[in-house]
Image 1 (spheres, rainbow, N blue to C red):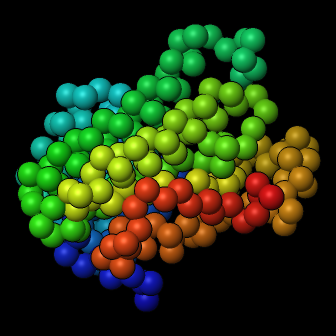
Image 2 (cartoon, helix red, strand yellow):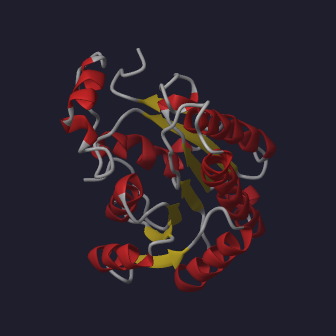
Length: 253
């Protein structure tokens, strides 16, 4: 049984073609919501929609770096599912490189996807929530996905950590701006989670050594974020805005 009831909510989740985005889409549908799954890889979105059911999910092509693409994605989502009242800005990327070596184009790409993308996604969602009467209903919800890298140095990931620190402050800033517009904005900072992207690394010697530095000497599972995501999307989080939640299995201790 879902921990929180999301029936009657319509979500848009970015970065939904793989990893955490796919997981978030699954759990919110299981909790009763409809969801627009957004990403650039539409072929993988089609698979996810087929799994969730066309009446509950809709695929949206969206490049979060591009404002016109974000606006068009919301247009398509609302045409198919109705007004979006809940947003999970999950799209992100990483390029591992030492600061002395990283190409400036790669640095800019990380910033554009992780920070600009989160801003464009949240702003367009908030504009539509306000136009739909969020000030009266108080049901607007925006969740930004950052990382423990927002406040913990992850070696070789200066661009990524800086971008995620920006996402954390962006969430608090937007929460303050929209606190009287019926929109709650919060940030989730996950630790290292086992996904298709990193599974090979953590099987190698370097990955095993890194995991050995974690207090519990293990990776998190995607399901470890289910409760906080459901809560922040639900009516139950009425009094929670401008908060930054660390869910990392103690990795940052």
